[in-house]
Length: 252
Image 1 (cartoon, rainbow, N blue to C red):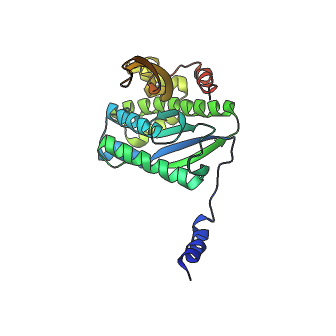
Image 2 (image 1 turned 180 degrees about the vertical axis):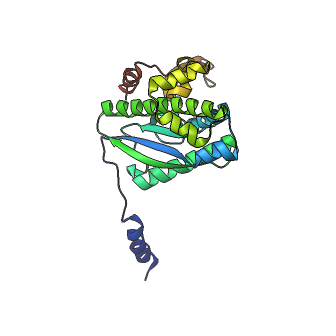
Image 3 (image 1 turned 90 degrees about the vertical axis):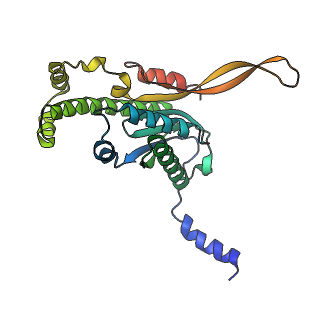
């Protein structure tokens, strides 16, 4: 059998399960750290409940992903997860699922490992949404999840500091309402409302058009150059996050 015929035959098996994201739909890739609980608690023993070292590694990973060749308009991270919103017209890898998932997971894993100087691995999934309103709902959902997890994390680790076991701290929290968890922290001289916003709601990454003056090397004349600059927000607006996000994304 000629190689070209042999190659075509075998590629049928390789691509039989290929799926493509249809046009005119919004794509959000969500990446999650694999085994990061063990990584942060046992292997590296990072500061709890939130580590500046870990946060900065996630920021570095986000910056890398936003500049990795895809047209990503907005990024969000909280804890060990990352969400990336593609521009609706992005055609990377012809919008093929397996390529998007594998490349993004690989890029994130490599960037995080480099930033933290310890192996960290991410998995990836795609969320396909038909409207911009649902896109903003998605990011609001992730921010609310961050808020819930942050409150639980603070309560859990403060109970552990008081000598409670894993089971005791976990069981105690299962019986408490949100208001009671806030009160628990208040009794420990912690006002949850005044804690850093990035710990409670996560961080947002977005592009902003900037104009910079420079010198044309050919004409030796002053010129203005338009560029896109990547910014990140440690204090996302709450309340009003969905409206803020919708205002930014309406420019797409």
